[in-house]
Amino acid sequence: MRKIMAIILATVLGMTVSSFAHADAAEEQLGETEIIVFAAKSLNTVLDQSIIPAYNELQPNVTIIPSYDSSGTLMTQIEEGAACDVFFSAAQKQMNELELEGFVMSGTRADIVNNQVCVVTYKDSGTKVTGLADIGTASSFALADGSVPVGKYTRQAFVNAGMIEAPEDGDVSKITTREVSEALGGIEINECANVGAVAAAVSEGSNEVGTAYYSDTYGFEDNLIIIEKVPYDLTGDVIYPAAVIVNPESSDVEQAAAVDFVEFLTSETAKEIFKSYYFDTDLGGSAPETEAE
Image (tube, rainbow, N blue to C red):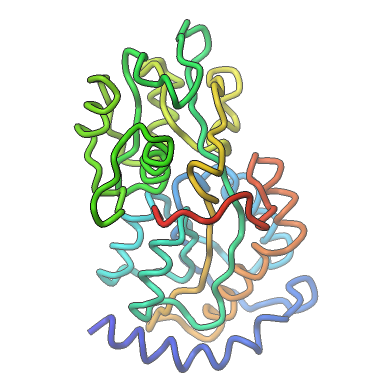
């Protein structure tokens, strides 16, 4: 029922988007409201510390309530009817699926940033690992589950590097943790629920190495050491899209605020903030986008 309602509302509400899309947030103050933003775990720091405060300088009447988790988990919550006004995903796949199902408000989707998968270790780990190619020599490896974007991008890199065989249908998310371990010589793998768990496991020394986004090393410079930035040729571009989600319960002012916030994410102000947190705002494409996400 929610899906049918979403499809109908996405069509109707999409007709009103243009009235908000070009509004100058600095000039037009929105009324008091709050919006719920579902965002990938890797966006936690930049949104909480800088993006949301910067937006509130322009729109002080809009309260943003963020909820962070893996993009796959957030997508499922939206599909199951969770209240959400904006979805900021760490991969295209989840946004594509929601759009096909009618949950994305027409005309509001935008690519915001790019990111890069890195092989990381903790300070003074003494690891001999030099990058993805010899990661199997580590004593343990923190790896996100295949349903998590960084986990899928890592698996895609292994496939493109010839280290793991791709599934027949090409869906690398189906490559299990056990299969990764076997392909890498039996390495012990700590399967993590999201990229934040990977960064935490490695920075705390629970695992010798892991694969996380470059942006996830922000704030951990004293604990996390980047061994290698995995080339985009192996992972494909790691694009983060954002869009307004059809919310049958939202008011006109809530819808306007949701559209306005997504517009803010594409602004020059937001780009400078994202850059300072190690995100790449050059969306020109260093490599063809992978089908992993």
